[in-house]
Image (cartoon, rainbow, N blue to C red; front, side):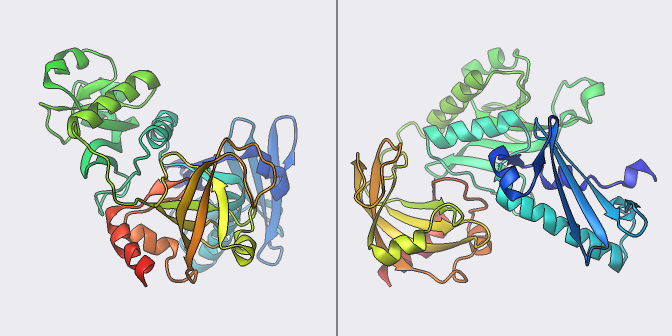
Length: 360
């Protein structure tokens, strides 16, 4: 088979996901010395999926034709688009989806350094990522006071200036940040920093997120960019609108709210008394189900939960419940919220809509 038309189904599907190894055996994987293995028949036992995950998180898979006892290669041929091949491919993708839902954490980016930076931004500033270009959904931005201070996106190295020809086709993830013009000359002498791609070269630079620069140095530049963009940012006295996820596999929140109008929740960062918290039920529901208001925080013990290793709790008062069909994940995506992996502020667009639900 021509290698150029072969589809890498598993690596493409899981390129922005990280395996939670503690969940694999519960799902059905069998652990060996070198890897985890999962087998499942499908389509009335006509086919068998064999999925392997190495101990360093690399996934591979095969689909075996049960009648012929050999790999079903049309599955991976991009030029095989018949209805039957499509049916097999769809069924196999559903199996991968089940593994993803039960055993994976979603990532914002494909590169490790990009994801470490995203986690650091979320922890330090609690700024949520947004996707400013409908035609380029892979472009992610961070804002303060409505203005960009960081833009992350995939790019071929050849699009940057002064890149060796042998590296021009390599796809990397790039970070655009604002810098003080007085620092520009010194910064551009550093390996890994380039004149800005598609932004003002007088005040912005592009950084390749490939570990050439350390995480500490990059985050310092991001922090400086944020200050340059909004040097006089003031706190807002109005309540914030937050989204926090609840996994129904680990926490029966419906039972909690059936028994109590007040519940205690692990305290999250800058969520303050008076803020509104919208609880997002994760897979397989994927929808906003409850809206609450924070009435207390910094609680050292919980009235409603047993003893847990938690530094502090916040107390939530239930305001109302939504039908799962009212605000599903597709609705959130339409209003700028593509993922909910941890506590995050609502986008301006979503907040405008959801503010009305509090008054109804």
